Every structure is written in structure tokens, then in C-alpha cells.
Length: 321
Image 1 (cartoon, helix red, strand yellow):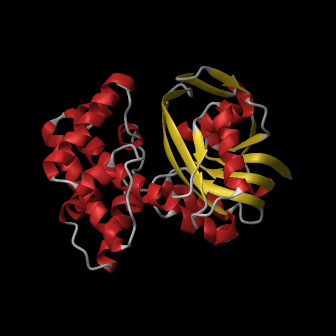
Image 2 (image 1 turned 90 degrees about the vertical axis):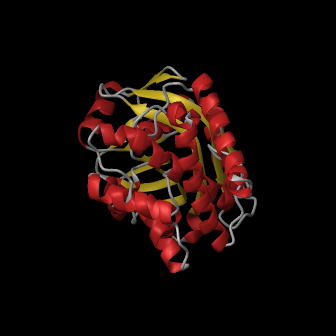
């Protein structure tokens, strides 16, 4: 049976970036992976390029049921694979668990496996791309926020964040993780919709006036959903969500376009993972993002017409798991 300080479920772009940095910094890391990806890591290690150049050997576990204990479990799979991945891990003893996935369902799924007392909230403004040869292109290293869902300060959140930050992936412990998770969800939903619709690098649709307006309208609909649930939003997301939601539509468009100019200058090759998945023929995280928002809106008897339209169209045209 295996024990680890950090067990990372999923060896895609973000899981590999975290695993490589933490292992290089001397932490005891095990990657839970399968198939060709697991074989590649066992053979050549984790290969990172772009913002960091790392070639790092790391333990690989292909049978998740062999994980006996982890001080910190980090879930980095696609959202639609979460239930299947966690089903084989529930017997493991876990000190704390966090997910760097997109969406809002992730904490509920972790709580079902290990109880709410084990769950840390997390929001990753960190990006990478798994290339066909197995290397990971590290494209964005802004912030990984970690915190207690209750809003309390905790030693464990600080410890995990400090370990990750010291390894080279920017991270910090925060008290308002629920606000940040909802803000990231609002930003991610808009970015996902436009990345799939335009199929261009991120900066291009963010700087285009028409695309920026559509994106702003999607984010504003999620803002209405957040308000219905009593959630305050923040500008500390990939997009200035509070500005986009709180002002006029023209001001929202201008804010989106300013972010696009920063992407053009600092991350011109950045592409959303939704676009990467689409072009690679992989399933899209549709039900866990757009579908989840539409269902929440229905429960709150709230109309989100633009989001519902994109959800309906994507369900008809995109591959689903």
C-alpha cells in the first residue's frame, strides 16, 4: 500500500505542473494516472516547458485503490471523470482534499468521499497544455488560492499553499474562497463559451469588441445566479468579474478587452483547456459547467437565456462523455 505527502489525481496539464514542481522541491509526491500517460511518466518523468523547464522523476500509481494514505489529495482530472476517480480512493486516509478543477460541483464530490471536514476550497488561475509528445507547456502562473469553505483561517490551508508556492507555482491561503470559486466559475463559463465558439487563442476573442460583449453578457448572467444565492463576487479571477457584473455593459466590455490586451502581451499562445479538448477530440466539461449553471437557475426560477441557448446548442453539437 502506498503513502504520500501529496497524491495528485490526474496527470494532465495542471496535475503534471503541480506534481513536477512539488517533487522537484523535495516533497513526497505520487501521481495517480493510467494508460499511456502513466507509462510515459514512468518512462520519462514529468516534462515541463514554457514558464519552467523541468524534467522530474516521480512515483506513479496506476491502481488508485493501492493508495493507503495522503496528507493532501489534489484532484486535477476533468470534472466528468471525478466520480469514477474518487470511487476507488474512498478507503484511503486523507488529511485534506482539494480540487483545482473548474466549476462548483467539486467540493460536494470531495465531501461525499471524505466528509466536509477534509475539504479545502481551491481556485487555480494557472494554465498549461498537454502536448502530443507528452510534455506540458506551462503558460500561465498567476495564483492558486486555497482556503477553508467556512471562511476561517487554518494552519492546514496555509501549509499546503506555502508548500506549493515555495515549489514555484504561485499559491496563497485566503479567507474568501467561496467568493473566489464563484468568481472563477463566472469567468470560466464565459471563457469556455467563447473559446469553443471562436476556436481562437484567448487574447483574440477577449480583444474583439463583439466577442467581448457576448462574453460579458454570459458572465453577467452568472452574476445574477450568484446574487440569487447570496454570493458576493470578486475581481480576483481571470476576469474582473465584479466590474463586469456591477457596471454598465459597455464598461464590462471595456474591462474584458483590457484583460485581452494583457493576454496578448503576456500569454499570446494561451488557449482555454476547453478549446484544447475540443481540438483533440476529447469530451467537453459541458454538464459540469453550463449544465450545472442552468440547473441551478431553474431551481432558483431564474432566467439565463443566453447561457441556456449556448448549453442547448453545445449539447447538440459537441461530443459528450
